[in-house]
Length: 226
Ligand code: ADP
Ligand code: AMP
Image (cartoon, rainbow, N blue to C red; front, top):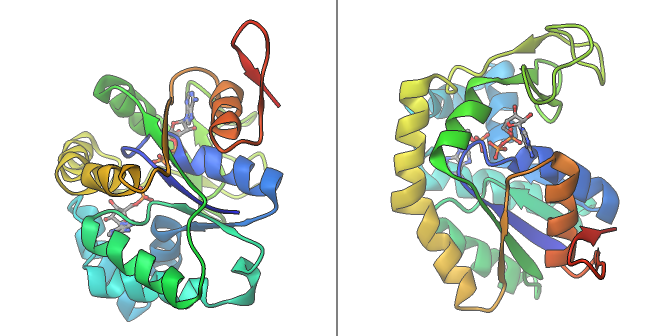
């Protein structure tokens, strides 16, 4: 399956992507995580990306598209992939369509996570991620690790991302509305989008996402399960 998870910063894309990718046995690809790996390795690409990320802006398309094109060419995406945080504007969406068309492939579904701004701010303010693996995501209030500041998955130190400060979050929300929200329209026109609420427990959101992609069940009461 080739899936795309879209939604504002803090909607829970990374949290859901890890779970969905494991459930579906597909590769989780997060451009944000790929950039943070470059930053940790202090590469030129990482230093360039970091200047844009710190300001809450998009990393330039040429860099971002290059990173994802290289990643999609690796054999571990042959069984499918789940894109989280890409595409973030129409030019990136068109580039992705082109990359997939060249490979005689296409997206199967797009899940659009809907969440009010106030909840985004709460989620991002409390987000802590693991220094060793950014896919290990916690929240000081909603999903605290057993030992404060220590990753429950691998024991790595938790930290607050430097783009998770409130002023930067406001900027990222503005960028989302102006540049990324139109991507939903692009894929809606292709009949690929299901919008679900990102509110509720992580498991509830996961159940909704599985139903949206045709891998869950809806019980008689209308609640979903899997
Ligand atoms: P995104 O990848 O969309 O930026 P994350 O997956 O990193 O978002 O989630 C942002 C923060 O919200 C994290 O601290 C995460 O633990 C928390 N979070 C994610 N999903 C939920 C949820 N359903 N309920 C409460 N908190 C959540
Ligand atoms: P994320 O980890 O998805 O919250 O992304 C963190 C930051 O990385 C974003 O605010 C952007 O600065 C940058 N970034 C991630 N994905 C993209 C993308 N597809 N296009 C441009 N910039 C991106």
